[in-house]
Length: 180
Image (cartoon, rainbow, N blue to C red):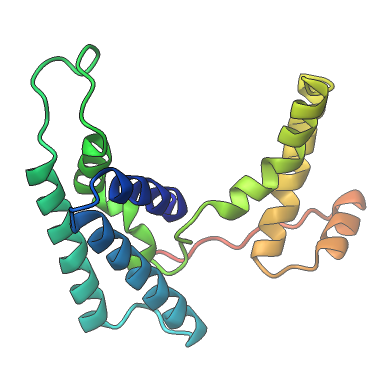
């Protein structure tokens, strides 16, 4: 789950419920965890400092609980009853906490999917301009190449050397992940 998108949605909640403290509290907790994770990575640590992590997790969970108590679920089937603004977001933050905060528990996981979005942006731009991609096969090839290059770059491989080696039949492969 992308924290950039969640923070944007929480900002909308803060505007919708200006007297409520929970949207800002959850945003602050997420930003605190992101900062702590980035700091730990820069310091070549394997984890966020335990006390810092516990403090931000407590703040995050408390904000979600308060939000759920203030933005009540409307009874009825989900397909026919629209929930109050922010309610579904709060339920996602509660029910999928492991996914939302994975970056705080595993420093190899980024807090956002910004890189993945950047990888597909050129094709989406072409689609917007021309109204279509040239062909499905061309789009698949483009995504395969961009994914290969992006993955190599994320692993610190020289992109040009990786492309050259692939064209010469010596494809680069990412290392096997170390078991946790």
